[in-house]
Length: 356
Image (cartoon, rainbow, N blue to C red):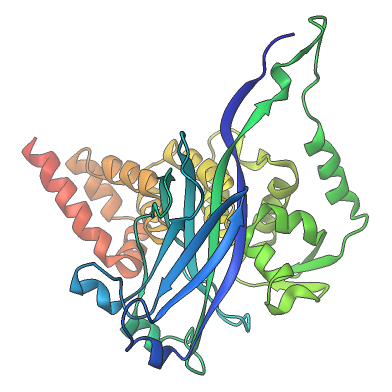
């Protein structure tokens, strides 16, 4: 019998909402006294998230103005590293505000009290002006993602005679989505309705896990309205959730496919679908043109896509003629209005290319 391979492509993810009450009091405390601690067990390992309202202990004074978080490993010492990621974003338990952009840090954990790099979630002055702070309280959605090794069953042969067939789970789940059998939630998107299954959605999206099985209002509702999204984009995202495929992005290079990839990237970042986000990044990275470069750069900046951002900058400054052509597009006007800070990086890149 052939031996099974292992890989690190599967993950275990856990999501919780941490609520900080009495913010005005906690922000004036000592860093450790004003710290909210939450213990988790993910993939058999014990973890602790520490959420600081009064600044990070033992760090530069500049960090005192931030709401910050760290991930601590509480398990026993190991011979091999555990790879894990902490993600944090502000959410509105009332459901009236969109979640803020998720900020993440990954790390390798081996010994007790190993910690991640701190996440600087939001400056306190900005939080105090925002609608996320209500009745002297705010809520943070925290996600711990742990990479695990899984056997690749398609590599196993039965008694050296017959190969195990490839999984067709995606086909069965795709048919379940098409039939709507057993659906327990209906999404209303731009005038169209989509029947789906809360358990499947929650298993794939940490955001929907929190909405359906956390403390947010959609937990008991059978209808969920999705705003600021086209129906075709939501349909493509839903297809991926059930089948792990995005056929809309596999066609030839067309403007329609590029536009779909742009809209999908924004949508999946909203729901924490990291794999589809990477697929969209890859599709957009391979199709940058004068007409799309500025728009895609703005998208990459807004949704924390560092590789896609670098590809856009490289394309735009590769020749003076390309830079001039991009600056003449409508997308460049959008970039100026929505992401003024990225223009500095564009200017630096252009100067660097000119010197070389």
